[in-house]
Length: 280
Image: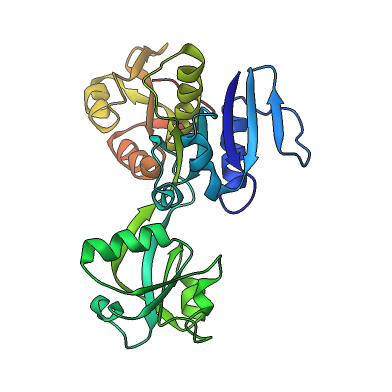
């Protein structure tokens, strides 16, 4: 039975659960529990603290885990980073009071963080020495309460830092998002491969939409330049032989710009359909 760790709380939990549902797992109602067996797919899911998932996976007792890239880096354990999942995007950054703009100012100062591994590695790379004050969350209050001179934290929008009178110094230390990780192994089996393919199919489905449109047959080649698809668009003849129908996958973020271009060259009946899952 495949064993997979997923976040039990925080901003990673709900998106991870939704992605697994879209991939065909955990279809039955879930009540508060630590372990859920998906007998239909022969997978056992363990609901764990996001910070601990990399450690459990690295131990070799779990096959996969969904957690934050920043948490994996902070844990200093050896796991395979298999797929970026596209949600819970954030940055790990240094922040200080207004007027403290030089990143080198952190030298010899106190820096509060919940990510000591990441911070110590950055200080080492920058050849800087500072006192690392380890806290378990809500580090943005550390400067105001006199516990630290700076903070090093993972932020999504920066709003919380601004409310605490802090602003980011320099470039982010790390860009992060949710990732699928696996234990370090060269072993490959059908069930593991199927799990990865299912998750990847959801990622692709979220990034693309299916577009159908009619186009004058003499403009098919021009239309295919606008919508090349993966291998090639599907082109079908209509009852009126002077027109053709085209079906193709296009990036969802570009869909309106593509519709504009197609309409301008003469396309009609442009339809866009959401993709639930996709294997390429």
